[in-house]
Image (cartoon, rainbow, N blue to C red; front, top):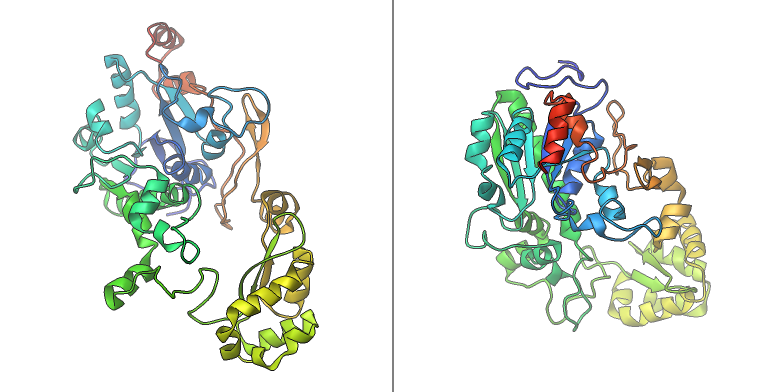
Length: 427
């Protein structure tokens, strides 16, 4: 089968040439980051993603619709920068699912879709009358992928979560922080972003199974369990050795104990909150770095061996900081890398986005055309395919932007019927 042939078990629309997922249509109820981030991946690789939102609340289930950053002084559900970033290349419709007619239209869309995706709390689609059993009635080979905090089964199933809660419940938050201080966590909503990637993979695996067997299925994704899978070494250390990941005498999180390295950390530099990371993997790395430092203390005998550097690591870090804090982080990066010592300046957003040539060459920040914002820059994807690469050119949909288009092109409604649906508040 060629890349442009529709799999024989898939029904519906024709595949656009040259896309990896052009044979796939998704009826999408996802939002925020963990859901919308998943279907962004699929839309960028050619899937037709029809995002269904509520006309009554102007799609505000997704809080990102009305949330900063903004491109200018305009505000409202069509101007949220985060929403645009996570919904590029999707079509957006509104349907009032409080009405029977709205549910009838949704049934028609689902019947023409390969996947239904959502990241509501467990049971929301059941309450709407579109739970797994109903989806299978509409289309026997349906793929349904739900992504909630704890999955739909087990003692935690009724609880609602956000990314930071998932991080805490999975143990990730506990693993990061300074000695003798409370856990600091992994940054805001790490598991929202990562949960979206897990969900994208879940959808792809279910599509592969359907391609091979013709069978649909429900993928019940627990975002907390996904976070737990990222905590492998800490879990293994506890289950095998009985050791918690944070304990008295455990090393500073910036230091490497396996394998041991010294110096190994993030060091303050000249400037406003500027830092550089340095890692000496061996005595040869240290010899090269000490030559670069060129100060008497760096040539002292006690630093020549790893054992000596480990034994006085606090002192070594303090002395190294006296050298780094008077120098520019990028100058240190260039000179240390030139000597073969792994080093990287800690980049601020502007430095990484505007000035790092790697991101430009990789096309990591594409511009899209948004119906109201105009041309704006968004996140690209950190992977390129030589045959079926992603495309991100179209901005996220405004509220109901593609409602009429979907009703006419997908469902075959004429202009009079669409006008009635607008008048009756169905769309």
